[in-house]
Image 1 (cartoon, one colour):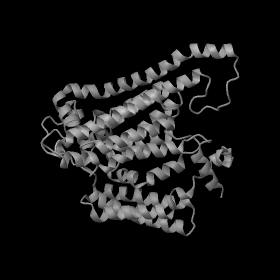
Image 2 (cartoon, rainbow, N blue to C red):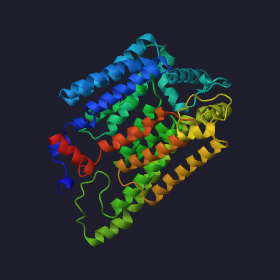
Image 3 (spheres, helix red, strand yellow):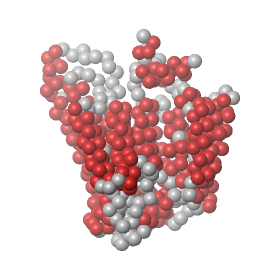
Image 4 (cartoon, rainbow, N blue to C red):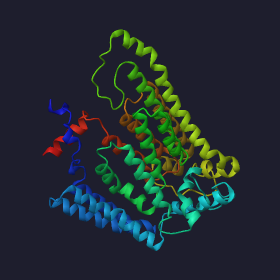
Length: 427
């Protein structure tokens, strides 16, 4: 019985278990950061690795000595994000993506499109959708500086969206843990275009889980205008809203409901089955329509301004169809197939298509019942896509990581994972 007992209200507001991280976790993070500092050929990554390794090592020592997990987490976070970020801003070092975003904003203001007309080398290409240029507008308008750096605005968008996506009474602890995780802390410091996309996807699914179809569509449409990787979130949110409509029509609570049962008379329930389904189903359609219209409004003007440049930058270059080769080349299955197997690029794209089809079938046959289920489904789909893309890199894993952690952080009180968490907290 203890394994199915919901958490009491005080338990829901306590700090998550310190052993989510623990000394071993921080030691592993320190090892990974130190390895990056020693072996990376990128200057910003070496700076981050050295600073983050110190922060993670200090957190491991504090945890091993029995200090509060909140203090240890704060020390790890300080070493992994603010310390290297301030140093990199002071010496004007950033990952290539930061310069690409800043340049794209300048081009957008000057020529109406964020894409160079005749890209030659990989550094000329901007593989992001036009909405990403928004984060470079402060620098394009006010000039380079510590407060106009695109990575600050991308990080702020990520943390703000994720905060609003988390439950109102339990935001600080999951935010601290996610921000201190190396896969997130690294792009927060050196610059990462994937973070705002992940944050907006979580926000869109959270709003869909609350039944706010129009707002969910706006959030997901904004994410879809940043990178192609956000587009799978739209059908997942639509499936979530459609499943919620069927649950509500059948008298079951939607995501976040109290689960008290249906006290209406049989005639009232029959009326609900016929009368509420159409409006609720329209919510799913409204979410999808708003998302597509929002993305189209942000993408089409620049795409129509120069269709050839748009295709070269955001379609051909990411798929490896240009003479310039993308630097996104981590040894993941899709890249290994495309590089070392005859016809491997076609095989990798075929596996990518099959994975997308299987995820789509799962949405039709067994749609997600809650926002957490939707996030887990989307995380799985993106993980398969990252694995089989011909040009991919480990940094893209921030998408499924953030979605999975966000899903775990917002589980309903009766979920077994949180029951186990509650037991550890109460010790």
